[in-house]
Amino acid sequence: MSEITRRDFINGTLMAAGSSMLPLEASGQAAMAALDPSYYPPALTGLRGSHPGSNDHAHSRAWDGRSDWGPTSRLSETYDLVVVGGGLSGLSAAYFYRQKHGRDKKILILDNHDDFGGHAKRNEHTIDGITRISYGGSQTIVEPKHATEIVLDLLQDIGVDLGRFETAYDTGFFKRHNLGGVTYFNKEVFGEDKVVQHPYCNYPNYVEGILGGKLSHEEAAQQAPVSDRGKEQLLRVLNGGLHTLDVPEAELQDYINTHSYFDYLKNNLGVDDPGVLRMARHSGLDWASSGTEMLSIAAARSCGALGFEPAAVYDEDNPYIHHFPDGNAGVARALVKNLIPGVAGGDNAEELVMARFDYTELDKPGQAARIRLNSTVINVEHGGSPVNSSDVFVNYINDNQQYQVKAKAVVMACYNMIIPHIVSGLPEEQAAALKLQGKSPLQYTTVGLRNWRAMKELGIGVAMSPGNMHQAVLMDFPVSMGGYQYARTPDDPCVLQLICCPYGEVGAPTADQFREARYRMLSLQFDDYEREIRRHLSGMLPDELFDFDRDVASISVNRWAHGYTTGGPGDSTRVGRQPFGRITIANADSAPGADAKTAMMMAHRAVNEL
Image (cartoon, rainbow, N blue to C red; front, side, top):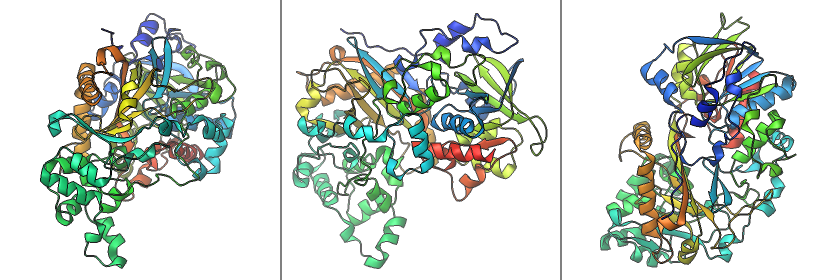
């Protein structure tokens, strides 16, 4: 039996072990800079993303109102700018600040996770000596030709060549291997383990170059493991039913914008089979950010839910190909390299793909830009009246010790909902607006396989899985660049992507569903996830070609308790992001939006508001 690589690292155990024995120097926080040279979070497996310990202090502050954190070490560190949050927006804020004020300006970026990048998370799987690179969150630079000049100039300056992806992404990969969209029905929910060569939704079309389903709607409906009545209902849905709406053409758009997708399924198409409704509910995934019962007909059609014809996801000028092998972690790494040149060799983003970053370079005393990981900010407060204060004091927790630094300005590039709990003195209206900004939970699991012969045999490019925790399983994007080669043949080690959008109880309000799903997701241990993945892959793939203990080399479960931005009602986003003295607010939440370009633009706005 091969041992599965799984380690549950709690709040950067390696860092704590390497730093706790070092004294705090008056000239700066040497303890924070002294990472163990072996410290390299991308190679960690087990529970990642919102890893155990990463949110403990923030939750203590927000949920329990904790204010006593013990003695505070007031550091002799003063910065021109402190950025709270080291994701794409926070890193971009540091970039824009230096661009505006000079590279000599002193900047400190604080992040509660054990790695920079936020949702732009790099996963590395070493499989029999071969390293496979993948992503655990933010995937792609979406629609770059629609980006502003500000974003395009940033990407160019940090060495991201958008044209390179036209050759780096192998659009012919899926066709060569006859890989398309299928659906896996599991025994626990649908009564049998069965793979049907039809996706029953548009979701696979976001994978550029993938084949569609190989069955007609009639064949797909007959093969679905639902009741005979359910097969009839499923076929009605697959054939499309907007023509059944008794609505004048001139009023149709308004009608589908304001009426429920599930009401349409039940009342217009007569769907009541639980299996068909479950397939429909899970057919939107991270495009919908919720179960599709919460969507309008128009929103369901836009995300390609069950019953709407497959369509191109993006226009011809913006194919979905702009992935680094590690997703938008490639962009985050290029930003870090721009801020801290000594972190790795390489002159552009492509040359960084295979680079092992030296994390001991992130927080060195004396350098202009510093990134301090495993550091949860618990209070941000002006030195006097926000109107005329010249200083902002930032308190944070690292290794269970409270520290304080001083800044001339602060950009809050973190989850916007937490800001009222950690920024002192916010106007009541602004604090209330920020508390309305939400995010849906999201989970991206990456699985290192020793080969993908079983996926090839069944023709699986993307397997929709409405009965499982992970509602989609897909081959990783076929991208080769910077000396990295994706898994070209079925005998090569590869990475599978498993996507989970956890939902709460059907019929509950969206916010309540997100809360329920978030708590459930974070309550699980790694062994719980491993058992689920074992059952999923073993039920889906043929026994003669796949054995879990033999073929699975490693698992990384990237849990994002606060994943996709959903935004608050009405004008709350604009009200919430207003400047407050020397403090401004960035992050994609403040748009609201959920892509890299938006995160960068919110950083640019926040820096200009300082």
